[in-house]
Image 1 (cartoon, rainbow, N blue to C red):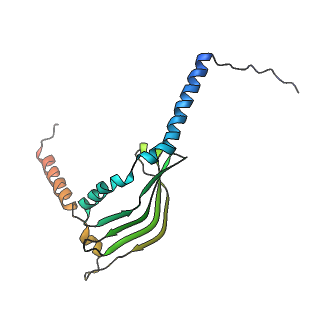
Image 2 (image 1 turned 60 degrees about the horizontal axis):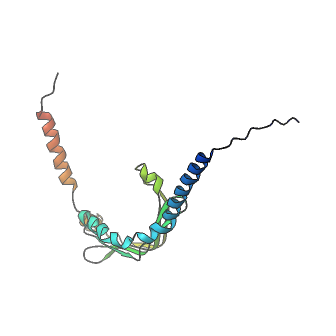
Image 3 (image 1 turned 45 degrees about the horizontal axis):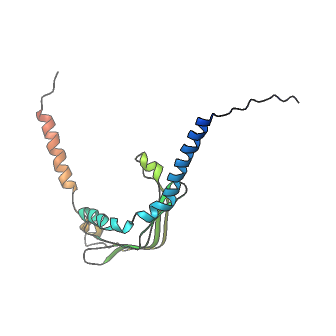
Length: 167
């Protein structure tokens, strides 16, 4: 067998320094993502905002017990809680989950796509009740906003009809 002599490519001193610097900065950001961010972000501070957003659309009450945030090596975020429950406004339970976690892929969020990698639920209960009209009672607790959007759609379509079109 004949072996050819392969020329070795050598980087200049400046290129080596640039490569090492870029690699070091990326490594620092990655380690900060894994170890610093979960300790800096307090997910308990976001619970009132979540409850407020939920109250805009429903009259359900949200309870999160011991929520935690952790990061994963594949650039994911894992959100877990010991207990998540939604109760009707009369304090009857609607939905209850124990030892639940959700893993979200962060790079897909940059592309405006939600990718849930894993959903884990150890124990879950749901309380669906029918009323006399054979409809779920959960619909009684959802704030009706479709009427508002339907009214706005009708107004916008009327405005379009009134505006003259150019030939």
